[in-house]
Length: 152
Image (cartoon, rainbow, N blue to C red; front, side, top):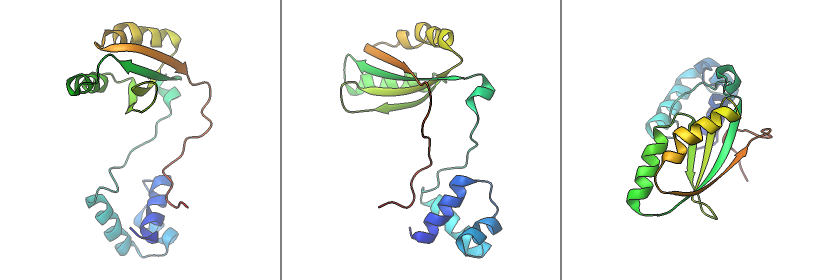
């Protein structure tokens, strides 16, 4: 991947609906070579898809909760079942296996604290194998950025 590919990615990260002409103008290429580069990046898995960013408040999901989870066991079966269960809970929008004092970091979106309590009672606390969890409500997001394309 060269500098032009990274410029194309920067344009697409800012606006995935940009036309080939807009992309070409931004990177100094005509539309046809832009299209070829985009197709190659799609086929190579660099570009994994195109999405829409939705304002969570517009869906009445005003609160984000970061949950640290520690499991009783770290067997392959336990980790697999835990992952499958998390995948079935729509409010869990990210789940990361992490190093450190706990095993997983979850990002959960809910309407409010009552909705989070409901989620705990009805879903999270029913997952077998959780030894401990700690929840932190996000008060304000200071930074949310796209991937850095030009580093170092």
